[in-house]
Image (tube, rainbow, N blue to C red):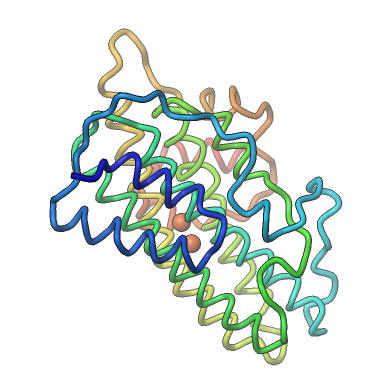
Length: 266
Ligand SMILES: [Fe+2]
Ligand SMILES: [Fe+2]
């Protein structure tokens, strides 16, 4: 009987996207067929480099090519590549949640496998748009911010607070703002449609993060979870002023009115 955590690690660390997706299909099928062993005898590895290090040139965040003018192809390409990279990173983040956190209810692994499946679909959808410009994933430099954030949040509460409930929730805000901006720019209809599909599914990812964040908090005795403190502990000053919040999406994903008020007033 194959071990769930071994297969998940194999899939997560696989550097070739096509092979990674094949591994994932098998992992998902075996999970759904309930033929995997969930025993855990190893300590989850803390990775020092992301799986995309062989396909992308990794640079510091400020060195990543900027979007420039979205009216021009070059701007659209840079934007699409940046989104493809977020989606590719998100595949590994969902798999890392499955791999790293042991002894949780089956629903936890089910949730994050479904998220990984969504992220693979998002990645492929954006790559097919990039292809129309003759560009493929890896042609433009990337940073590894999401990967680094994941390796700084190695317990369940921190991870769920920071990755889905902070980073992906920020994505809900920026997706909406980006769609508004693109609406006034010609030849962006396909990008807008893709972003709307992503936004809809990302609400569910944040919602799953919210559910497991609250679950992890409920297991802690003598500890009151403060989302803002937890996030700021991982990266100080994470909350910025003047953000255009996607309040409707955040509420659907589980943010309370009180949290939204705090977010508005940063
Ligand atoms: Fe996504
Ligand atoms: Fe996501």
